[in-house]
Length: 367
Image 1 (spheres, rainbow, N blue to C red):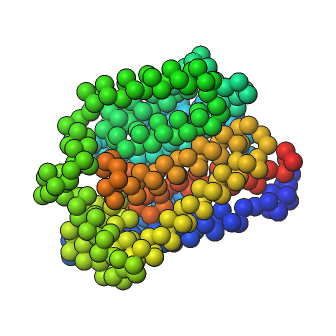
Image 2: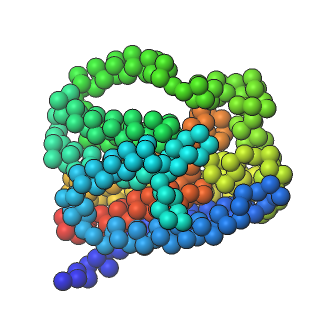
């Protein structure tokens, strides 16, 4: 029987924030795709509209099904995600030297995007059962480490270092939230201090070049440093109010590479200036605060941790992308949620919003 309290508790504020950011994203994406003779295929904008339609349907499904039912099938969701990542390694489509996509008729799916949701769900399910005031021990962290390492390694193998890093950051955020025992936390810090330098031996050549470029883009201004130099020029040239819609020269003259995906924030800053860029960043900040608020109002462990995980997923991706185009972090190929072109990314983010709505709508059950 349908509970009318679900409608009474529907989170209209979260829906409005999501639609506001998505609307701004479509405006910027239209400019990034349509402006200039060397722009990407105009059909990409139509495809993005279709993906948004599919994403809204997925979002509706995610807030309609009781999140406690989602918890019950958490392991199955995770297993399906891992299998899809394995299939990518054998049957995935090669694009720009990476194998990240699976064909689904006229569309292609990026399973690594969906893996973010799967990791959030399975870790929330695990932590909800073992959470304690004393904090997690090494033994408690063994399973979450394995659950995180499997998709991380499969995604890094594609290679897609950016998404793999997001997976790790989501896991770390959720783990810190549920609390780690002090002694365990100390030893983990020591281990990270040893492992992180050693990890450089396993990086691909192009990933090492990205780190060197981050430290000094002028070393190769026409090669590896070209992206970040042109991005900074675009952002700086926008000044306070921007050059106007479809008027960005870095975008229109195709100086800005990947302007519809990784570097779309540069298009936004060039055309709408500091005012427009700050407005979008403020909307993202409100979205993150809203997600934390939902977690704070929930009185059920799985719902709380799930909300924190989804919020961390969005926040980490926003911070890394904006930091990347400003030259504050290395270029790792992370898209800007709801703004960049990418069907799998849009659907994943809208599914995450649907899960936040799910928890928010059912808060009355534990009050």
